[in-house]
Length: 70
Length: 268
Image 1 (cartoon, helix red, strand yellow):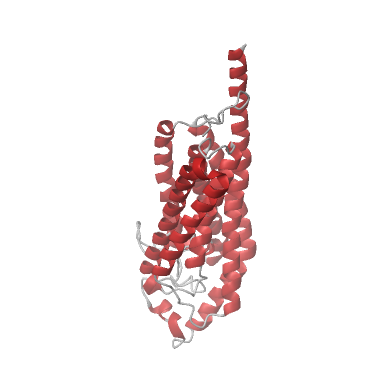
Image 2: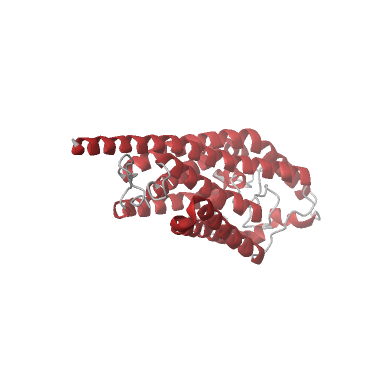
């Protein structure tokens, strides 16, 4: 698209090469998902460390951020 | 532009958005959480009270306070509604800030002629609609005392399955809109992508089971809680969206200016 509309004054928008972005996206995507899991679901339907301490610590956040809880 | 520049801004904005989310959740949401727990405890005193009586009996379940001394809760309510809520809000804020920043890194320069700031705004808006608003419409947040401990497994599966469908549909709809852009132009491409997303979530939403465990819980408290919950989610996403649109827009402009200077220098 940008090539077809390239007038002398316009500059192509800089992009981040996907190959360069992939390891960052993968690692921090997984890390972010793990954090979201502990806040949203741990010690509810599934418990990684047994008990209720994590569940209770983030309990109000879990309810108010719309995650299923009881 | 390096992914690191995006990530650092995402983490920073996520932290600030998380703190703002805590303030809103604490001020707007907590009174209704407390009210719901008070109602639950009033109901729990009468064993015959409908759906929620099992709450105290189920060994694996948890009660919401008052009996901290006899092991009902590990974390006192006073901690749950302050430090606990802050932890949850900031953790989710930082995680989502990083994810939105890295998705924006992929989107910048690849969404037609949108600037870095505009691309980030689109990513944030699509993120809010697909991970918060649409899931909320199908499986709305419930206050304590609504929602049975016996169904938490099924409810969790359904909720996250629907979020997954919504996010994947939103991503594919964006790719579709981008493919259609040369043929239909921006107006037609955006409408086509949006229509495709809406069609998928409506059909899947109708097909998936409905959860109704409200029982005799007062409708006004339920509504106030849900409104507060939606406001909390909106604060989180607005904070991330506004902060990142500003910072990444600035980053894009600087990069663009640098490219222009290099091209000017090369043409002399």
